[in-house]
Image 1 (cartoon, helix red, strand yellow):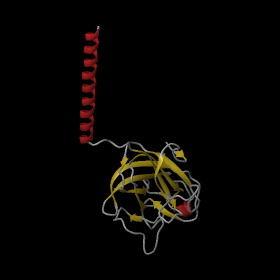
Image 2 (image 1 turned 90 degrees about the vertical axis):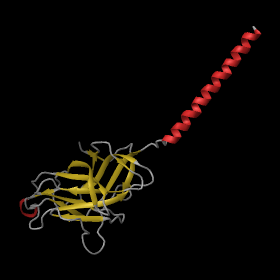
Image 3 (image 1 turned 30 degrees about the horizontal axis):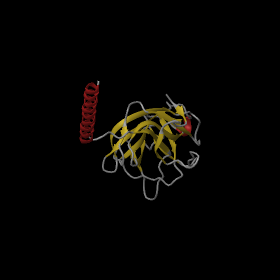
Image 4 (image 1 turned 45 degrees about the vertical axis):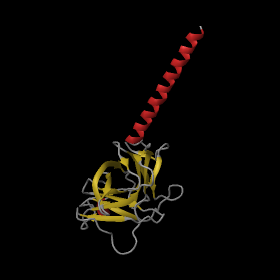
Length: 227
């Protein structure tokens, strides 16, 4: 299921979008399959983000994406499968680690080049994003001939890594490389009392109920004595 615009009820966990959900419509990073743009091979993009002081349950992911397909986009036009795989991944020493959730997004075939669209896809399973923790959003092409421009943000977020032909994650090169524009949405996780707090609460309630029982017993006894 593909949605346009984010959840109206969820909170923003992280966003690098500008005011009014803007992003740079003329600059992009490339997610592509192995045969989409010969002879360069495949390219995966990864962008880090850190959750604030509140934990959230993931509800949706939004990304500014465009699409064109090969097998050679500059010669044969946009005719490849238009699904991109967006993955939420744990952090492993400053690089994407284990995959936590995989989301397939159908990207409209709007030609190349294009300014893209801010697309939203809902979470497919419960996933808690822990407070003060770093995660990665990763774009990969599940089809070798597909090519996806990921339009970059206009707010200065630049925590970017790239991987070619399933090799190691690395910085794109010297200089600053802006991250693709995206937003993570979620519902705040309610605080759960510590076990010790629950025990104290139980003792307090028991004492209160016991006191009320004794007091009521005294009232009833006094009432019978006055009858």
